[in-house]
Length: 429
Image 1 (tube, rainbow, N blue to C red):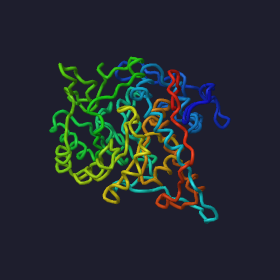
Image 2: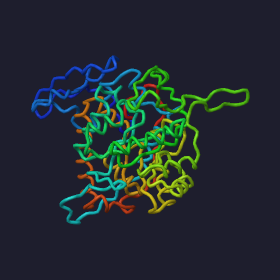
Image 3: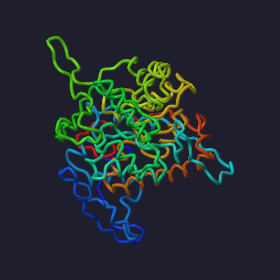
Image 4: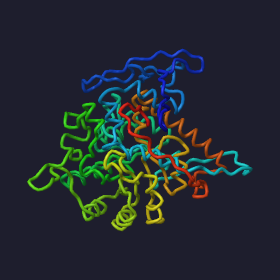
C-alpha cells in the first residue's frame, strides 16, 4: 500500500548514502547526559557538532526524506511517544486530511521576480511565517535537546516556542541562542502562583510572548504510546525544576463517576489574572470554537493558537484547519491567529495563511529533524522549508507573504477521508 500523506514510501530505502557525489559515513550518536541509551544516529546521518566539515553529508536530502530518516533514527517506545495520537487517532489523521480539502490558485504573468517571506508575530520579527510548536522532552530525542533547536532556528530566523516540560530550563534555552526569536509555552500548574512565577522567569529570560496551553487538564488516552511502554510517570528530566507538573495522566475513579486530581483546574477568571500579572502578551493554545475565541480575546488574549494538540488529546476533535476560518471570523482583527496540526510542507503553510492564520506551527517534523541530525537537522529543515515556501509563493504569483489571502485557495469538490487506522503505520502518516 502507498504511504499516507506526509509519510515514507512503502519500501524503506534506508538512509541516504551520498549527497552531491560526496561519500557520507553515518556517525555514532553522542552519549546521553541522563544515562539512557540514545537511538539517534544508529541508522541515521546524525552529525555531531565536531563533525561539521565540508565533506559532512546532510542529515536528509529533502523534506520528503525526513520522515523516513526519522523512522530509522528513532525506534521503540520513544518513536511511539512522538508519533502517538489519542484513542483511535482519528483526529491525528484528520489534521493531515483537512489540507486535502483545499487547492492553491496560482496567478500568472504578474512579473514576480523576488518574494518576501518576512513577517512579525506579536511584534517579533521572523524570516518566515512558520514556527516550532512546543514539544516536551526534546532531550529524549537528542542529547542537545532544546538548546540545539534554539540555535538552529535562531540561525534561520524562525520562531521557537519552548515547552514548560522542556528537558532544559527556559533560561538555558535562552542563553543557547540569545538573539533567536522565542516564546515560552506554559502548562498551567496546580498552584496558580507557580504559573505566575514561570511567566516571570520567561520575562527575565527575554522571551517575547507566552503561549498558555488550555486543552490538557488531563492527558488523552494514547494507545500506541501505552503499547510501546513510554510512560510519563517514570522519571523524565524536566529542565524547569523538580516542582514542575505535567498534566494529570488520568482521572481517578470515585463512587459516582471520576474526578480530576493533581492536575491544573482553572477558569477564565484565572486566565485573566495571568494576563494582568505579566507584561508578556499571552497566546491561548487549544482553541477550536468561535465562542472560546471571543471569550479569550475579551479576557485579554493577544493571540490564539488554533490547535487540537496534534490529535493527542480528544479523539474526534475538530481538525485544526477546519476550525480555523470560524475562529478567524469570530475575532476579526482583535488578535492574531496561528495554527498547528498537520502542517508538513510549504503549501500547507500557504493554505493556513490564506484561511487567516498569521503563521503555522510544526511539531513532529521538528522532533524528526532533531532525531536525525540534531542542531544541523533542525536548521536544514528550517532552510529547506523556507526555500520551498519562497518557490511556492513565487509560483502562486505573490510577491510577499502579506499578499496571500482567501483568493489564493479554493475548496475542492472532493475530499479524501482520513486514512484508516493501521497498527503498522509508519512515521509521518
